[in-house]
Image (cartoon, rainbow, N blue to C red; front, top):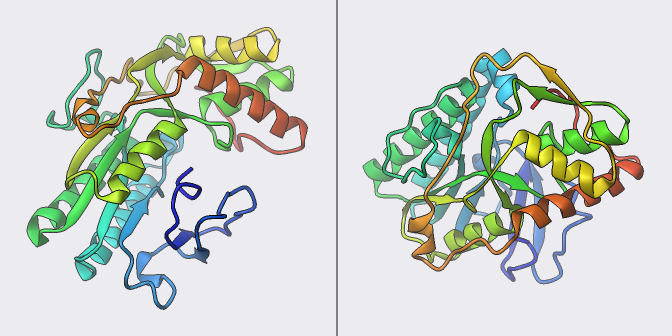
Length: 296
């Protein structure tokens, strides 16, 4: 969506090779660069208007097993981005963060609430936010931090709940579930996050911290039920020992972002069902949906 809705030149970067075959880049001039540092961008990229940082270690379970990797990676990304912005103060930086920095909550929390991360992944993102805001305030830089809730999309290929559920059910295997499965998370169609990113990239948002969420809470069990139902399969489950730390609920207040004209357009139930169907088609076509899949 971000690629399809701009006519400006774009440079996509990743430390892995980038497959652009699925992107609609008919309106934009698209380049790719295999790098893990903004300092290594191709020649002629000094006049970049906006850099959007989506990269990071995002797997909570892997961060619990190897917290050092999560901290080192997410802090390094933040420092690299902050240094790039310091060297290019005419540019804007948009950094993707997470609702998990706020910690467990049963009522929507504002951006001004103190961070209360409860596990290494969340703490690493909190560190990244702290580094970036320090650079912003010290050097008067144009920085937007955008926190997101759980995202839903048919191209998700990761150890996340919906791809794991689809792959497990289609393999006639039970979906692994941590604890009771009653943990509540807010869910949102990925297209709604892209709309928020476009607002930030166009300069419609002043520098600051914003929160993008639909406010629609569903438990792990409810999401699995939706996936199983749309696939026409019984929701087989296997309950496993809970994580050593498991927040029971996350909730963010998106009212600041809404004041600038953003609102979630996608129906969350419909988005989950559509994503499950798309993932099912990909799985039947031979794609691997969730490497190293585990419980959720």
